[in-house]
Length: 309
Image (cartoon, rainbow, N blue to C red):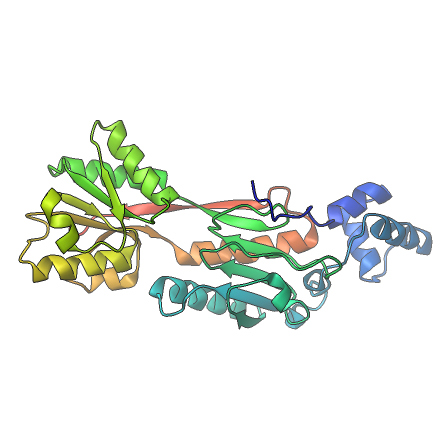
């Protein structure tokens, strides 16, 4: 449970329910559009005040799409994973005619007044704006915890993780080692569980460990926390004269394009960043319209076997 999470903000659906009208009628009322009577408009606006609904600037932008501004909050841009996703969001937002402003990880409140909606991909949880701020649609990508007022894009890794583990076992791996965060992570747990289901115990160590720290255990398969960690392992193994994949097999997570250009090419759990970006942008629109009955979208990883395994 997230102790810091406040109550979910009122949405257009709450207003429609309170006023006894459709979502489309609420949209017309709050945007002062024609097609409804003055009495209906007043009833809707009264219901909006009653449930403390603050119209979304992005929702009003549905009338004038060229006026939409998306706030994009991303993690460390020196990490190609975040940079690739940011570039994909920028490209797809431009196709839709949206403006984009970028911000450092932190509170969504930093973007109030500058953006009509927010997409966040930081590896951290985005804190919501304070009470009384405009209704700001927020979509988080692969967040570490759930905020009830935010939409989210979840990554499904277990299927691809199972494929990777079967691949490693099929090539003779029996002493796998999983590099994970100090406190553990869902991706590390998925690998440990998949190995255990096959009757193989995987050892877990800190993701920053180098080959010098690992060699006494003589693992025959290494699962890096991400592709950057996988690249580092390939470098360390080569420096110590350890052959990949003959002596040890290496798998990364993230599917960075750079994995095609290292030697040997890195096997990885990849995800379609264009699909992630499209899902996030579509969900932003649905949240602003109040048409997102389920604020969660799921995008799967897939396992790509290359020469490192």
